[in-house]
Length: 225
Image 1 (tube, helix red, strand yellow):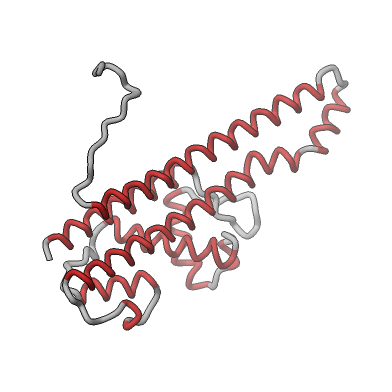
Image 2 (image 1 turned 180 degrees about the vertical axis):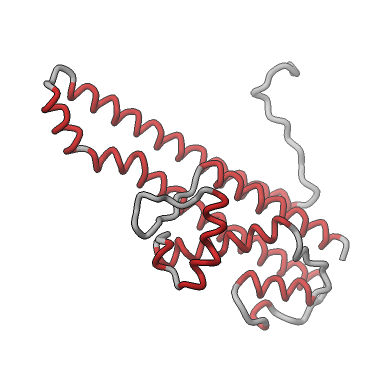
């Protein structure tokens, strides 16, 4: 095999079969984001090319009429479609995180004969999992940067799921908790009165990395239990 061939992938088997399948699921999500982002970019470019062809040779006033007529279509390709895609990706990423955390809890219960169930604890999904893992005497990384970031993800997810990403439609206490994070990350659009969440491709890629790193850290702690 030619070592200079950069297209050749190096296959490294994870430590456990659970880690292998987790890595597969996360890679699948990454590929989905990459493929759909490329498709939207291509569709936008094709629309722009078509628009340029349609106005070629037209006088200035007719060109402007054409652009005015199709401005909503351009806005969809430029703003709306990427926003819908990234919101759906983000919600899927959080759902996958919950699935992986539930798998970890199930493994702990089986391997260490833990009698309590996840449903025995009150609170939201994250709070239940945190209490369960702490009850299992796992040193849960409360001060970990990835864990703190994941808590911010949940606030963001709730805004997308419950009010379609319209920040100003949140309850006051939820809004004041979320807005500083959105501003720090540059994730809120100013083109609407209700300040709509506008995720970026780089943020979505960051989400995958944060989730992966957090799960790897938890896995290491579990193997030491």
